[in-house]
Amino acid sequence: MYFNQFIKKTIGDHSYCYGHRLSIFEDNVYIDGVKSQFKVLDEARQHIKEEYNTRKLEKEVSEDLYETLSYNTIANIIKEYHDVKVTDTLIENYISLASSKIFTIDPVVQQIRKLNKLDSLLENKIHYVLNDESIVAINERTQEFLNNLLQNQTDIIEYMRENKDNFFYVIKKIEE
Image (cartoon, rainbow, N blue to C red; front, side, top):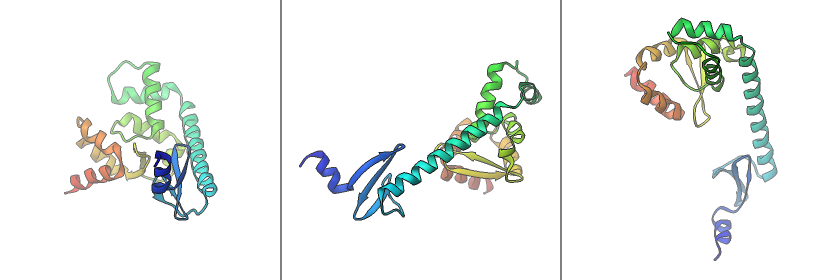
């Protein structure tokens, strides 16, 4: 038996769409090995394409909003919290960090995100996109608590950034 025949017997016909493996097995469509509600590959492809385009548009709009912030405003925020020489590169790094929505305890990033209207849609909530692309939201009080508690704990912050299970595991452990 050839490898292609083996794959076809075990996971069915498959193709790729925007980095996701689509396969049909026993009249079900699987996306990355997970059974979906779709019965036809074209429906699954269309769904993935729409999701991809939506994420891309959100990212572009968010980045554009951050790019319109004045460097003076961001420089003043950096000076308020850190005693460092503010350069264009530092400002651009903070803009990049804020627009990525990655979990951080840096108050500069949080202040920059407050200036972006899209980042403050949920009142008193801060949302983050984790490495596995899951989204978590915490209130400002929890964020302040984490800022104080995790100041020099880069390992824990990196662990929390991986996925929502890790994120909430740390939150629960802190509450105990």
